[in-house]
Length: 403
Image 1: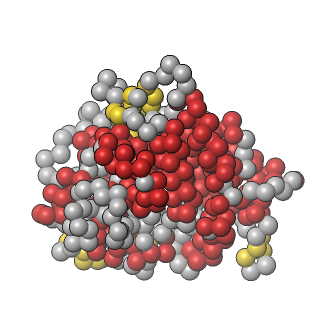
Image 2: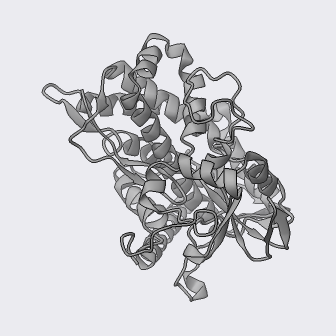
Image 3: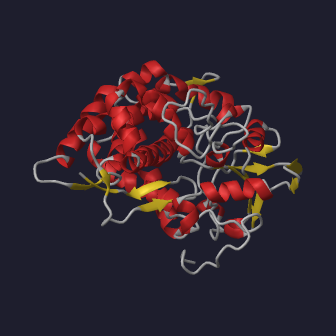
């Protein structure tokens, strides 16, 4: 069923739709409506799910790993694919539950520590400058800041980390869009993309078994648990996770920040004048435009926000809603780029807090800083089409700007 063919939503507390176009473009008002009337909303769409909108409820679910499993974190599940072989493979550590989660996560943390991330900053900065040189070439006055800039950065950084050729990044983008952005409406295409990814990364693994390189693929091949090497499927699942989780989330955050700056000239001018404020501004962009929603599966009947969630039900960890909760954030619907107290949960919370948060922060700071250094004065192009993707990851997919 296409977006246009689905019935309209008339009761957001009991029939919400995470792909409803107006919600995707600006979910804030709907989150506020739900939070004020029925803080834990319910829907039967997309296989059924619950959606808590209060900060405390979202955090409660995230920390309660005994009653909420991560075995299926998809906001939009593989509806309509009945064969077990069609189900997505595990992607440790994001789909791991305790006790395995502990060592699954520990394996990759060395590659994403603040010190480790520094090695990719020079590459990222050079890439951003290269992209901005093309965007600001003589005679150019229009660009798509999402397609030509934000969406070019994370795929190439991830390719560098995984250890694959830069020219393969176009395939990464296609796979990511098929899996996260279009998968619910085109499940067979999502299945094809999954299989292509697995074939590609098992091939990469075979190559690294013959010749190690300085990349995370080789690193994982050299790791042992209880004296045994990691299974090939575990390594491929983790690499697939790095690809999917490390691309769409970060390009959405960069795109949302640029959209804000294109439409809020006072903030843009201030960041140009006070570049030292950029790290604080990035945290506020993450809070206000949080891109990611994750899911959990209840393993027992649970009371949450006055509603009964039954074992087997899907619960959405709506981090974007939590980050707009007035009980935890002053003036939550305003973007305050100098917000001093900002305990946002854009990267999640608890044992599954994003392991790549240091990398994402670095990419955002470099990308926004280099854009403003090269192009301090720009605005949304009134003649272009601003489009968004939603569901698991929300953010601008087309961001036309003029300068």
